[in-house]
Image 1 (cartoon, rainbow, N blue to C red):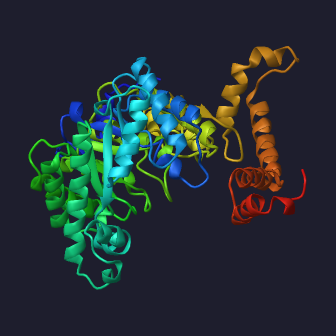
Image 2 (cartoon, one colour):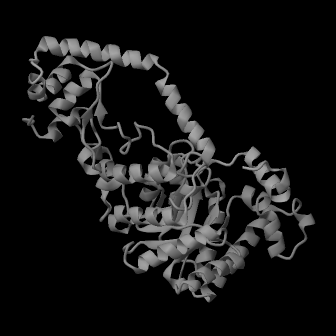
Image 3 (cartoon, rainbow, N blue to C red):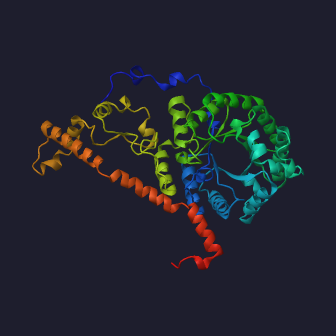
Length: 466
């Protein structure tokens, strides 16, 4: 149906309320995908190097700008992934995507990663090194305190008695030593940051970032490691960090989603001047996951009018299904934007409205994200949609001598409701959940499995044959 009035006269555009929010130039915003690193740290998720290569290609195709490929110093699998991804990039299969590798702030991690690169003929200057340490006082003293003591040549017996200031200063020296070492080894792009930024001291972080930049770092990264930021806190921290650093320096916002605030915190960070936003496909990641690529990109475009050049919004739902198959972790059907049923309607009131114009009940443009409005039938279906659907199949029904009438549509509607309630009373739903949970248990390694592995390694004769 064609509307007589312009849509702007009939409903208010969300951008009316967001036009006053300032953002960096959209051409300067970078989507920093961490699906292959943080996404794989989601409990129960594991990818082979070949699977990671396929994921990398899918992410590059959707239009991310930066991609973390893991922690080469930590595993053979991540070293192999780095090799496969860099080979694919040399073949032109990943476009201009910037590849990031992760290292702790120690020379050994950096050396192992450089050896991995050189083994396949790749110069250290071809990738970005993310060299990380800790940032909050809690982490500095109680998580990496002994590491900092060793770095400073102090005895571990001093651990609990030294003041926080000692650990802060030692951490800066540790970070800067690692950055300088990487530079001496030929690394040109160095991202650096400290875990638990959102619970750290903002003035300390500014001085820490400045020291890292002076040592040769090129991109500070500030994380909400445990996802505890509110948008108000994000603005408080973010505005101070951007104001405290040299103008024009790109800063990474790495945010988690523990309270479901990842997307709004990412949008707030961008409005503070952060130009590099860390995301993952489907929001996979530790605990409640990371900022969801689909939510951030689409909300920025539709609600704030910020379109990221070259981003393939219409591929988001295909990417979601691909990632479900790769990870074994399905998204809920009503997940915003990419859920399989998020553009589906059952209620008679809704189906009637959407039949007139989808915007009556849909605020997300389905065509933008490669979706179509659809209808499902069940307890809440209305006779009007049932009749419309039957009339669309009138020829097929006529072959059986059936004429579509309003009375038939009403009777079919009543039968649909009866059948759906009958199916709801069955155990099918709980059985499906049980099957899924059983499959995930078989993929995971439990504490009992761990003990069994130890027995098999140390006392193989105790393990039953077969």
